[in-house]
Amino acid sequence: MSSRNHRLAAAVILAGALGAGLAPAHAAGKLCRLRISANDLMQYDKQELSAGPGCSMIEVTLTNTGKLPAAAMGHDWVLVRTEDLAGVANDGLAAGLANNYQKPGDPRIIAATKIIGGGESTSVTFPASRLEPGGSYMYLCTFPGHYVLMKGVFHFR
Ligand code: ZN
Image (spheres, rainbow, N blue to C red):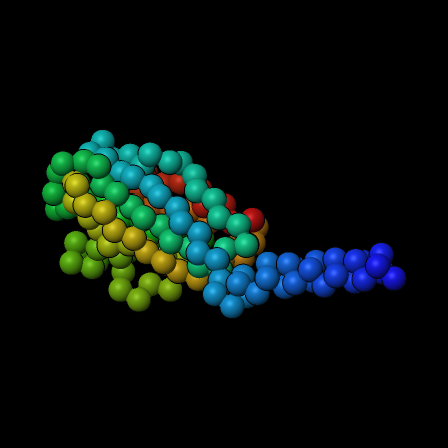
């Protein structure tokens, strides 16, 4: 009898623990935070970033560790499908700094920060539901001429 009660109690505790583990993931969602920096040499410090499907929201913080102003050596962080990389970069040229070198309303842009100058930091938060697990994604800087050097692979799997 004592042993049976003990097993019952253990089962209740286990069920409670499972419920507690699952509930927050569905209710509040999991925010995954990523960081990347860029410098006056037209370089990101990371050539790849990763987030898993366990993330419901993704926050990317970009820090410009350089000293030059945005008009001279500004950087942003723009997430696209790999096949859209050159198209988004080229259309960004005409958009100008006032639009962060991003074509306004461009549906190919999955997520983007603004352009920032040296010493500045900015971030963007977006729902992971915009990405497909195993899809092919890249990020780039849309400042004119930068994306040839400033790009990386974004893994979502
Ligand atoms: Zn740049």
